[in-house]
Image (cartoon, rainbow, N blue to C red):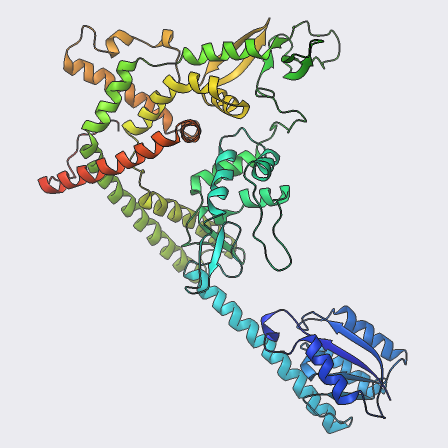
Length: 572
């Protein structure tokens, strides 16, 4: 009788203890290959799960049997042939019709009679039960793991699966690079393609190497998936629902929402073939079209970059002439220097930061309690929402929508509670702003094209080029020095100390309020990026100094035993 040998092994959990295909084939050949009543006419090998129908090699083998190419099948065990009712029923039916006359197994003896087919059906049913029970156990384990705040399966890029604790931990190599990619996107100055190129060429970013994949640069589609994945903001999406995760988030919820809005923003500048510092930012003052740039080489070999109107409008051609990049950058530098703030104001802000460290710590503790009360309120709303769903007062869609929003707010509050600087709405952002205003021009002169573009996007808006003159509007809260109201009064000329402090505090409050808006948060984010680029040593010193001041202020506050509920708010 002619037989086909069929060997199958799945990579899923159901077959972890099953012998390999090579081992199965060796055993079956040794057991049945030398028998005179058995003629092996073909071998089929397959690495595919049998939980559902659709195996190509299995279907081809049964098709050949129906055509009369063979009369029997040799396999390792019945569960190698079927773990679902359709494939199992098809084999039984072929035995009933006589198309399939015999089955031989290395671990089971089959006889083609009523009792043998009955026992084979039981074996197929047992295989299906084992597969279904295993799936139920996996789903239950995944559900329990998610409820504890941990994502099942493979950790996303930037994280590692800890085999000891069964949790997800930061990848020391890729986690900082993931943060850097989000930082670039948050500036609003980089496209996803530019981020992919920077990661590949400047950082040498390669995906973790695994058995068959990895060790390659990130594809553009991967950048989109990373920037749009809420897991990096501490949210686990599973089965159409959201859960708060316990892993270390790369960014906050608010930052993730800003990234998502940037990805969805219409009219974003497309990446150009040649990268210039200011293309896509400047408009022509005569016709309103964009200003582009191009390389020019003189006969002497000298290289220049000229900015000019694209002149693509139908009709009369725009008469605006081109301007050399050096002349354009000198105008930008002059504009940046006009935003410098008097050094006396900067010295006063730094003095206030040092003098009122203890007061800010008290305010932070009050905010901490307020955030904890808000978190408790959100958790109570979640419990009430579940009660409403149990009583069928809400539909599934309404419940899931409201639950998702409350969980996001819960994660946002926990992030703010755990954050070290959620109480820094006072002088620290103002100090960062003032320091940047007085150093931006020097950074602009020393920076590369990307840094220059980022500085201009941070401080200016609506740049318009007319007759080789660039006009730029200052973003709030940047104000040109000649427009600063009553600067002499702000610095205390002719005022007593009480009035002086009041005016200074009012000015600082105004700056602080502007920096707390969405645009202000983007400005602060860009300033921190630029500081890390131009002054990495000073950034490290400031962080260490800030930590020492906080510890000292906390010790002094506890030693006095002050009541934190009675505070002197400076910038609230």
